[in-house]
Length: 87
Image (tube, rainbow, N blue to C red; front, side, top):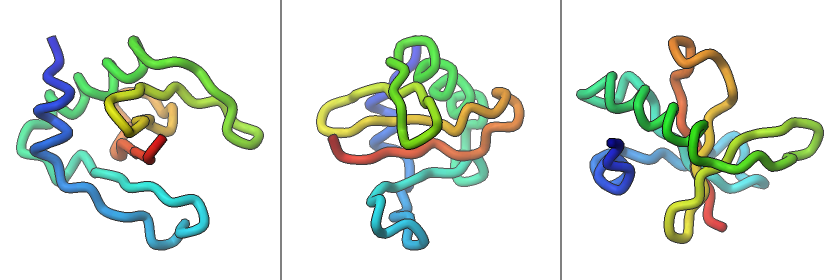
């Protein structure tokens, strides 16, 4: 079972300065001390999230509290970033 809130609380979230007009934050696989937990969270987002359109792309978003979380849809072993934005 994934401890999503624990992962959220333990992770460093960086504001995406290059996309300030679309405010969001991200965390990177390299920044975690538990790579398996990172991959488990990505899989959890994909399994439990809901698909939504963002411009011309479709992403799977997992809503937790006042935030939504998503990855870019690359294969799990190639995924390096988890994004989040306020809902």
